[in-house]
Length: 75
Length: 268
Image (cartoon, rainbow over the protein chains, first blue to last red):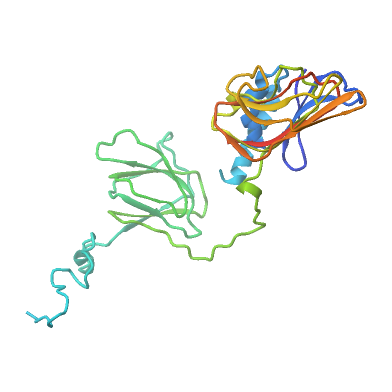
């Protein structure tokens, strides 16, 4: 199973992975990272070392978003 | 020779007014033999490229360069060479206002086509160009302020049930070459056995116990409700942790019910 990647209305990158069976209250067990694009790019070594991976397209999208974000910030 | 009034300072050994002699040869300047700097203007409407042998090459010399800031000035790449015409030591992307001190005897310019634009270069020897600010500085938009002088860029949250002794990893050391700053962290544990010890740990490798590594926070309260045992903890102060360390949550007793682990931080 791959990680789920979305970019929310604030421009933050959200990466989610379901980690186990449903909880007793019926909700999902989820690990969620919500980061600025440049911070998300720094997480890539961690994300790709975990059992669930991002797709190559997701990785490319994160790097593009991070590059745009750094340009906007002038850094 | 004029006589000096008794008690007055002797300034005859100075060139004038008590200040040192300027490095520029002002006598030659005043006599019309030299000017303090030269100006070249290159039309940028056509593209130039070394690869296509269309670069603009000029035998000029100096060690000070300044790019005019007028609105008709575009951008370009400069390569400054020395006498030996050695391989270009570096390509300098220049835009209006750029100034630098690099000795050169040959100037090569590459540019993309920029109709209506020119590259106006002031150059000379030993000139410390300092472009002035001709308009008041205006800070536009909302100036944000942040507690602790920084905002956080990463937020982790998890409802995963953690097994005792197995870390819940937030990020690996490979994602943290420069250190991280953690602004806030909270953790909870729920099980049917006993109130559980909880910890947030930072260490180069995976922690194996609740005290394996730097303990950034622990549980600070526990209680029971019915058959369930709860524990809670939160970070007490912003911490900055060195690079090369990962960040993990751990519990002493395996979780069995809904709880949240969270962290707000920045990878530096």
